[in-house]
Image 1 (spheres, rainbow, N blue to C red):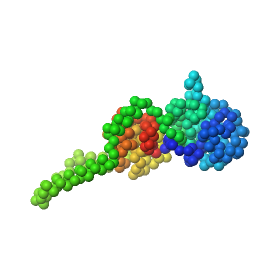
Image 2: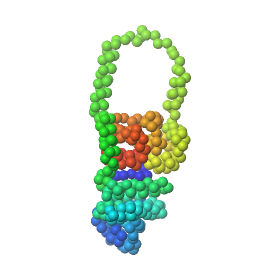
Image 3: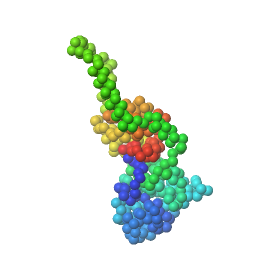
Image 4: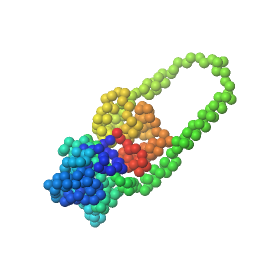
Length: 337
């Protein structure tokens, strides 16, 4: 997916470029910066950085990745947080992300991985750092195709409003049925049906069942159910007055995947991709369930992921990145493809 959030060591991520949260002198530091230098090769990377130093806050430069899996390391200087200069700090932090993304695009990178810049020893509040990072990355992806990963160590940055998280938690408590309880209910239902059949003792051979023609309205219904996922999707895009680009960007899926869905008549997307497209189209719950059915899926209260998604659809909240932040907090897979 174009924008993903993961809890993983950034130096182990597979990306064309990884971003080092650098100081303006481009010297090896501690934390993520130190880990990147050690993995790349301290001597080689420091020598390359010395040729480019110093840089200003908000700027970024690029070097080889040396011993890293990534081809490039982009060194971005984020701001040291100052509560009395919040607006300037935010501008500088956005600039660090944009500078990095532009460098990656200029060097032909198709993927890039970021740490949460300035959120460590530079003291930027994690929640604000995440909000700025997400905003900058989303704005860049409006006009560019690139896979962007944000690597975080913990969930401390994901402090969605207490009111929203409380509402989500309550909705889950009210609607989430564990698989065990659901299985017990199904077994109980099956046993009850079996008892009913034993008691009925109906001789079906004695019952005459005359042939009745299938009504034309049912024919039309069955024909509608046979409409492929891709045709339904394109029809909905036109009906909602949206463009293809707008939809796949809002769905957090890349252009190549959307092209497959659009052009291959029998192509079946994953459940997460189908839901992401429903979110991008701002479908109602009934419309979402219909679209999912055409891909062979359904929402279930036995699946926590589904319950969370259902909450946002019912509330009319169609910001996929906001939904993904909540899914991340609950250790669920993210929307997109």
